[in-house]
Length: 283
Image (cartoon, rainbow, N blue to C red):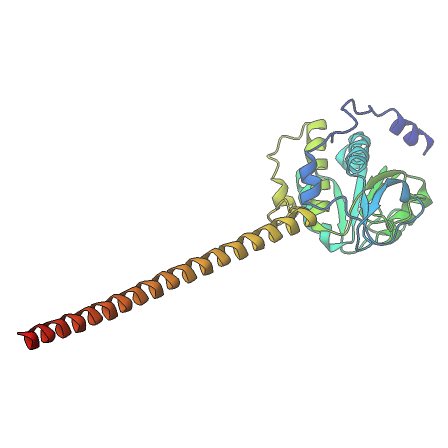
């Protein structure tokens, strides 16, 4: 165990600028909501939280999400595919985990982990492994307990509501979404395949996620845009109404003028008749 932890400290540290992500553009973490935690924040996860949203959900520091994932991948790369085991009981991660296993050949357990498979040598399906990775310390607690019993290291994806005491290598982030887990395992597959010379085409991030990813605008910006759109729409409606009223006024003015002209012409005609009659009478 001590040897494994020492190996972790020897992993090369990132040389990139502290305000930039290492593995993938920041937009990928945003699109997949990898930085989004829960309303619960455990003491061991508090240091990774940037702030809370108005609805109470914790927001993880995205640069730390990227950094911890980078460190974990570097650690995992030390183990050949047949020397470690991946467990994911949460359904949201099954697609990504299975794709990762198909590409790398790593042994996986989804849906249900056979308790005791690492500790009970009398079981028919007993296996030996040098390292275990879990996707949630709570849901995958049986695998975590078995790993601790035999003294092998554990890599775990931990959300803000998880306790990390028995996890040796942390991947911090949203472990409840197919999008975030899809991103984590896509990046893991890419780097692991490079490290072990696995020559297979890497599916796209959206293949791992299982849906199209869209970069949603921040709520404040979206509200401002919607408000501006509403104001423009209201202004257009007012302009149209003013135009209609102006046209109506012009039409009424034309009708009034025509009526007045007709009346004036009628008066002039009467005057002409009157003058003619007076001239005739004078004659």
